Length: 303
Image (cartoon, rainbow, N blue to C red; front, top):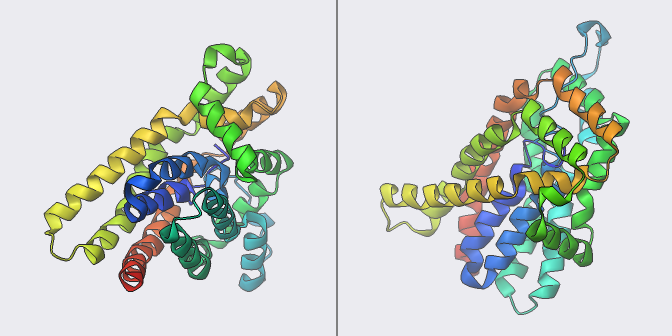
């Protein structure tokens, strides 16, 4: 699924989980929207784009490839750090709809300064080998992959587009859609075993972020109590992911022709994306663990 890279997984699942705790009941709708919008972000760039793989021959690697130059090409091709701007832009739209919510304003300011996905990008560069970086550059710069990525981002471009997206999810019925495109979409998702992998990634990275966040905010509670709270967040996030899994993907794929969907499906036959899952999830966990602790300190300071 090209709308969510492993790193993206759901940034919005993660940011949504954090904002749920910060804003409490007056932001339940916001949190839900942020979660659903995960597919519109590139970290919705950081489960299919970073996961899908192009096996490049080692002969294609230039022997004297400068690592710094390779890293710059990787950053330019995948644009992981650009997710920071997209999340801030999306939350800024929400701020206009919740002008009295000062906590949301403070949260957006924190994200602007923190540069979460810049940190994730740096960690990914440390985890991947040179050949793996070359593979991902080649895949992510393919014209069809770029087209799918652009389509995936449309729902986050404005409040009006976001409303259309949310309305589509609420009214989605696969029986009313193009049956061939629905079948091809299901084949694409099955090829990469996306649902199973994304649920596993959600559990890993949400736990990495939320546990230090809760520990920092609730020092009087036992670790067992904290673990219970984290487990509830993970369960809710996975349920939301599963509930809208087909609809959120088809929202993008419906704009492709059947021929393009067949080509996209075949990418997953040739490029098994699970090869990078562990490394990308490891990078996410390292950064998000620190994010949870730093976010807890920020909340305490602002009180």
